[in-house]
Amino acid sequence: MRKNTYLLGVVVALAGVIFGMARASDPVDGEAAPIFGIKIPAGYRDWRVISVAHEAGNNNDLRAVLGNDVAIKAYREGKLPFPDGAIIARLAWGYVPSAENNKVFGREQSFVAGPPINVQFMVKDSKKYAATGGWGFAQFKEGKAAEEALHKTCFPCHEPGKARDFVFTYYAPSP
Image (cartoon, rainbow, N blue to C red; front, side):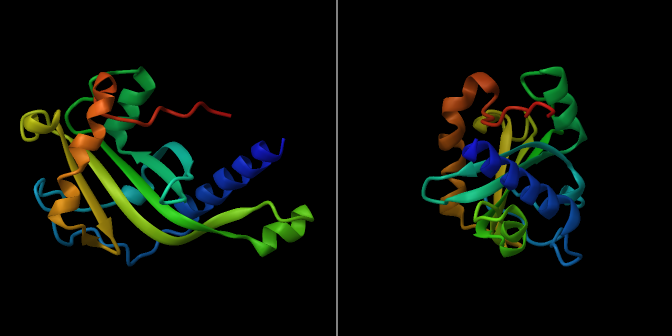
């Protein structure tokens, strides 16, 4: 029960961050990521939710995975491989306790998104990115593309997911 309450708090917190706190200053036409040439897509904060997650490893973060219309359609139809034009975004934040929420709950159990960690994108273009399973990868922190060395690790990390078109995230069921 405690785990379910915690996860509900995480989902509520992420929903608030995704839908209620988009900043006008979110960069969209900045620099392109090395190797793949991907820029932060305009309007990505308005995309639909694919899933949310708590990563308890080295990052210990909260994550929201969003998809553009092409990706969402493919997820809903169970279509693999994903069609060209699909874009998947992964947003990550540290998390902090919510004194306001915990006051309502009467105990410490609620966490909300804290400082942003980064945003990552997977862009499907089977011809342009043929050498990397049809996907281009990008990672940004505070609107700045991560260094080339980090981008070289993207495809090797996703290779174990070949049977799912190199995508780790499953479409979360509706509650």
